Amino acid sequence: MNLKNIHKIEFVNETVIEIQKDETILQASLAAGIPHFHVCGGNAKCSTCRVIIHEGASHLSQPNKAEQKLKQQKNFGGNVRLACQTKVLTGDVKIQRIIKDITDLDIYVYGKESDFVQSIGDEK
Image (cartoon, rainbow, N blue to C red):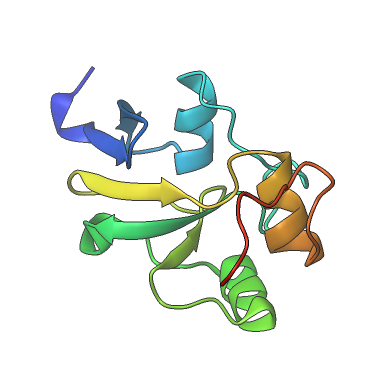
């Protein structure tokens, strides 16, 4: 295996994994046992696998047409990428999953608070 084709992904406050040049971020995270949401099966249709790029954006593949279309529809910022479409090509990156559990799914995808969300205080 060529070490030039292996890079590291640091998931903020989670773990660091290795990724091969021909893998998407989603494929690598699932292979490493990270419970990465991907409702559409990694086909750039749902955006549940999206990540925030904190460092190393220049090391990533360019957004393909499917990703560009979804990013435009959902009005994502430039530092948000679809893990199912993004590959790490030239160096290490630091990212953050946006949707980590069912509560996040309800808030970020369906636009509503889940029954699992509870108030932990009152504004005074």
